[in-house]
Structure formats: structure tokens, C-alpha cells
Length: 409
Image (tube, rainbow, N blue to C red):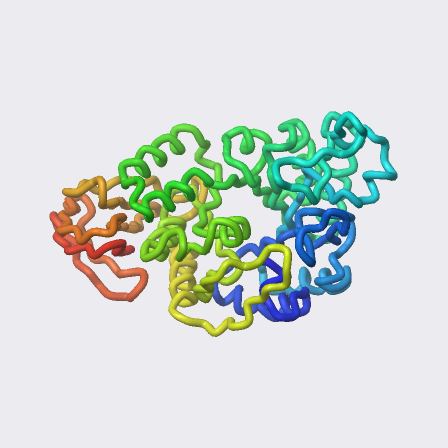
């Protein structure tokens, strides 16, 4: 949830009003982008970046007060929604109190003693995790929010901090809340060894863009899935997405990057093993514009449409079908042979005697498809239109560009 942009008001009170809609849509977890006061020094744009934090224990006045946040959290919990917060541990704003009030060693500094920036992040000052007191202060603020009832954290730029820090931080958080959900914005099996529940599937995301743009084929996807299955533990959750705040603002909407393949790729994030799908603010109504990152640029029309129904049906299927559960609970992916493997992806997943069958044309061409389904014959229901289909020994279909079918029993 991009609190600034998700309503004209851009505050917690307006965000709270949207919670029943999100619950009905089938959302389980609300991830709040950073909610803390933003630095003024070196600020980008008019309002600045959420990720240039001045005070980790306070609320951005744009969004309201601490009481407003606590009310939002309480309302979410009444609906059985979890709420996780962005943890920006790598850096503060240049005018955070720590810069002047804490010892110089709290920050990485240049030869003149000025805190350094990274990349083009000119509105931040990088913290020094060789300093024990920095680690303790960061863990302390994570414990502060956990004690308030926050259900976990999405940890920004997680690879910038040492593994040892995350191991210690996660132990501290889970001592307060054993069920806390920890998501690393990073890719790598070491994050799971550190104690993270989930990691970003960045490589998959970029590959889906490449396939949609005709630069890669299903063969590349097959290779990546095999590699991931061999590297990541079964218990690992992988965050899968067609958009997020960075992609929307800087790389373009899913419609810019994926064109007619957008719906097909979004459905794939719900269907692959270990995946946890992400919906970014606006996707649930097919919002098709890049949101300005440093300005007020609200989404004003939340009228439900076919995209709303699309995500509702996928969420419902995920909740109801045991084969699609994340981590080790879901069914293994077993490919179905087909006559055009560079364009067609076809597979089944089974658990508890129930099955999901997925048939996809991941190409811009019409494909006369033949699927060898003898081992998976049965009476299926189409997850998106409710139709019934009897599958026998061999299935012949004309698959239109980016056409897909999700069948289950």
C-alpha cells in the first residue's frame, strides 16, 4: 500500500476505509511502504522519498498521527488482515538526528567526514553496520513497532546489511512475535538461512518482462524454475509480482512492460511453486499510469472492474486450493508434455487429492497446441469462468497469443 498515492487524502484515515474492500478482494497481508517522517535536506521533489527517513519511531505527518496509525492497525486486525511495515535499515536521511547526535562512526563517511551516499540516492546517508551501536539501535526500533502489534517487516535493500545483523534482528523480533513475517527485498538463499520467510523473485520478474517483449522464451523460464528448485529450500516463500513501487515509477506499468501478456504473467505469479503473489496499489483496478514518486499523485478512481474480478478469482483459488499453497505445503510442479515447448507452458500441481492444471501460450503467436494429458484425465472447472471441461488422453486447443487456462478439481 502506497499510502500517499492510494487516495486523494493520502493518509491513514482514508487507507483504513479501503481495508474492507481489500479483505473482500482476498488480500491477506497489507505491506505499508515507509510511514516515517521524510528528511528535508537534499529532498527529492516536493515531498521527498519515503525511503529517506528522519525518525524511525515517528509517523509521517502527511499520513496522520501515531493514534491514526494505531487505529488503522486495529481495524486491519479486526478484519484478520496482517500488517507489515517497510524497514529501511541501510540509511537515514541526511538530516536525521543520528547524523549529528551520534558518534561519527555511526555512518560511512568520506575523507572530509561527510556521510556518503550510494548510487543516485543523493537524499540519504549510509549507516555503518560495523558499529555495534547502529545494530542495537535498529533492532530497538524494530522491537518498538513489533510491540505495537505490527506483524512483520519488508526489509528494504536487505543485501546492504550483514547477514549477522539480520540473524540477530530476526531472533529479537520473533522473540516478541514468533509468527512475525519477514520479507527480504533481495534474492538469495542466504536470506532464508538468516531467518527470512520470503525473498523477492527478481530474476523471475525480469524474465517475465523479457518473455513478454519477445526477448526470451519458455525455455528460459523452465531453466530458471529448475535452478530455483535446486537452490531454495522447500520452506522458502518467493515474492512474485508484475509490478511494485519501483517498477511502476521507474520502469513503467505492467502494461508498458508486458503489453497484452500482463494478465497471463500476473496469473503465473499465483501458480508457480513457492510463490506468494503481490498486488501493488492500483493493480486491483488495472491502474495504468506511472505514479510520481516524490510528489502527490493520487489514484482517484477505485471503481471495481474486470481487473478487480480477475484478482478476486485468483485470490479465491489460492485460498481454496491446497495445491497452490506457498512453501512446502503446495503441490510440486509437474510439466505436461506439449508439441511447442518454446512457446507453451503446461503443468499440474497436486495436493490432498486435488489438482490444478495450467495451460499457457507464453508467446505473441497463435499456437495449435497438443497437450499429452493422459496421466491427468478428469473433470475440471475453469477457475476464471466457472466452465466445466472434460480432459482425456490428449488435448487439442488453438491457443491465442498470451492465452491461458487454469483448470482445477
